[in-house]
Amino acid sequence: MSEGRGEAGAQPLVVIDAERALHPAWREFIRFCRDLRHGDIERLSIQDGLPVLAETTRKKVKFTR
Image (tube, rainbow, N blue to C red; front, side, top):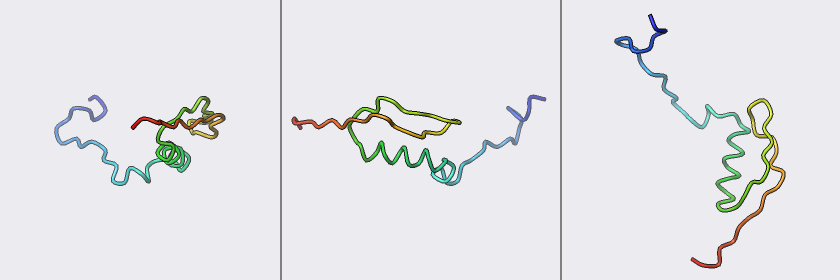
């Protein structure tokens, strides 16, 4: 068989609480991006698949609304 794919009765994995499924480093990075709203992250250091450092960030300010 093909490892449970396509079999009758096979159910997909369901993440009950997506926020808890994320590593705390990813949650913090997403929170940073949400708070930044507009801007650039020029360099992002990733180690072992996790964000560890944003070296340069700039915030953009729009004067036209």
